[in-house]
Length: 179
Image (cartoon, rainbow, N blue to C red; front, top):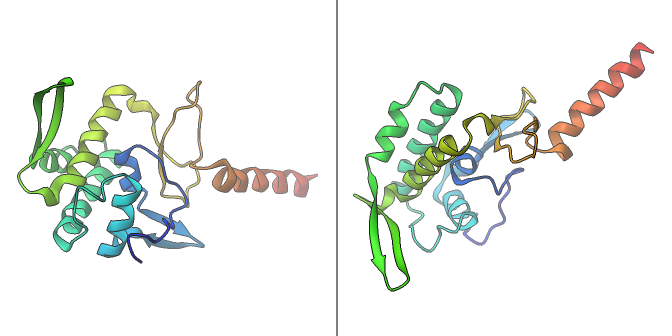
């Protein structure tokens, strides 16, 4: 897989923190992992507009995987904050003043921490905005996550075309069988 390779994941376009979690998914009962090598990291970086800024090398992959593990723990067990806090310790936001006005710039002790740090920082932003809208798919065989942006906050599935449709078909089949 090269940086120009298409993104094989079934759910993309979520906020950066959840998109990092969604680098692992299941297909036909098998867990797939985009971040199994640096080529997959290059695809993920490119999909999130980070490919020009960060190298898709072994060190960046290792740190990004640590960030993914920390985010997984925090999403699955909200009291488990140590991992995310550790990742956040590798960078900071520096206020800046440019000709365009005030701004902020992320700085890292080591640029290899950049992608993982940005994902952890994004998780804090999601928690600040609407922690109850960070969700895992309601399909118990699905490991994907999403940020519920529906008006009434009732989204249950990573995708209505995939998991939602399977659930509807299953309910329909059960009703038809009982009838």
